Length: 213
Image (cartoon, rainbow, N blue to C red):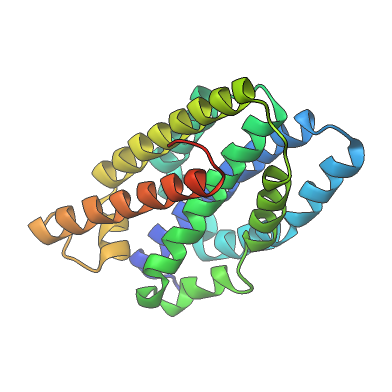
């Protein structure tokens, strides 16, 4: 069965998002304090690998054509927010994965059935739990806490900027996520509200860790 335009748009977004998670995770395991800790986090990402395969099945042979702008936007997140420490890497993954989970929670009720299978099993939740447990268990001094919070603010700002970039270029995706007519005033207002909600969710994650967003 050929996927609908809405299904392709959402699957493409998550496929690119999971590539960003993989890139950020590679950075994280490279900064992990031990091999055992690195393996724990890599293993927790197994559900995302499976989900990426399901997203690819929805996109089919048109994957590259459907995801070009989105892939570039997410690549910019990794390029502009390289983590230099283990706490920064944990926080970055915590924010990225958390934003993806928030987006699915906020929008998946109206997703086409063809793309709903991409979320089967809650991909990303195991990794989110592992990263949150690790970052919560850190005992950081005041200087490291301040630097990590500053880095987190940079990550949130970059994610927000790229989300706006994607929404501005991909009206089909905006329509699929908001249910509003592409290019309409409703679509614009709903998209702005959605991005604001995602940013606020990321800020609340930082606050829950005792970091100033």
